[in-house]
Length: 217
Image 1 (cartoon, one colour):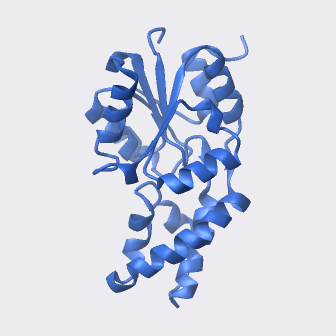
Image 2: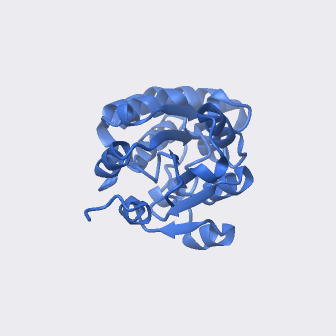
């Protein structure tokens, strides 16, 4: 993969584990609306489509705006207390940057919370560009987010690698016609990921270092 110039990362489930923060904020909303709390397993399966889609299946339509206000107010604090990098993420980003790769973020998470995470976990400086779905007409699996990032860097698609954790990431990569690697540390089942036939499936970002040959050798 010597021709790769730009690596685009998803955040949640790929580089960052914020599931505890998401579950905490989700069930805070449930309690405030006098609804039954959900298990982490149920909540995890809803992650990756943006916070409105996270709440929508479990909140009455008339309550959705209030639910979003409650969720976002709580979440800006829960992210600071309950989010962390996956093992090796920091080292991987440092090595990629030192080898001259351009790095970008493509996330369905709202910009406000993406920047909170990037700054709190001290990885903001690694990224040359951050783009989130709330700045676009369509979120993933639509390829708009990837295509806009690629245009920003004026690169050929053969020079781009996308790394995500969900079936929708594989779908977005396929539609954008870029090589896509999916890590199995996120919210999609392996069977869902395999169905989309991404370029590679790996168990975590440490394996990405081997694929790109930026490991300990």
